[in-house]
Amino acid sequence: MPTEEHDTDLVARLQAGDQAAYAQLVEENAARIYRLALRMMGNEADAEDVLQETFLSAFKSIDQFEARSSMSTWLYRIASNAALMRLRRKEPEQVSVDEPIERDDGDLLPRQLFDFCCLPEDDLLRDEAREEMARAIDDLPATLRSVFVLRDIEGLSTEETASALDLSVPAVKSRLMRARLKLRERLSAYFSQGPVIAESRNRGEA
Image (cartoon, rainbow, N blue to C red; front, side, top):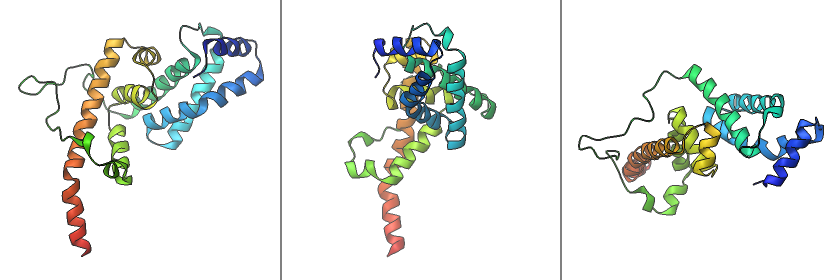
């Protein structure tokens, strides 16, 4: 990741209207912003729109950048806001993501916990397993998806994720826990049925 000195120099050049600095900002950050947008939006066309909107917004508001976070975190914040605004226009209102997940016995765990963490690597690397994981992430509520993508896919720290999404650290931890539990339950169902599905397919081919 760029250093604080790198960001300071780049911001100064951007605020001075240096055209080469604008090109550098895009070159250094476009790939990660596009990955986030694609994960958030689920299709390339919307992801490209979010990518373009992110850099246009950044260029317009660069004079307001106060270096309270890194440039990359600031761009993540702009991109996340742009994606969430688009998704809110598409998705119905959902239950608060900060309400606790509780079973009837009060335990904060999903109802199905097949231990897919210890499956053979070949099972985890199958194309269909990766596709199911991608679908599971896409099906997360947008507010949970944004936290999961930034924290667990892009590798931001909890504090950086909180800054990027303008959330408190406890809120990030709560949403990340909910996202992980939802994914674990969804993928538990998938992997627990895997052997049965494979056997049926083999019988069908015979």
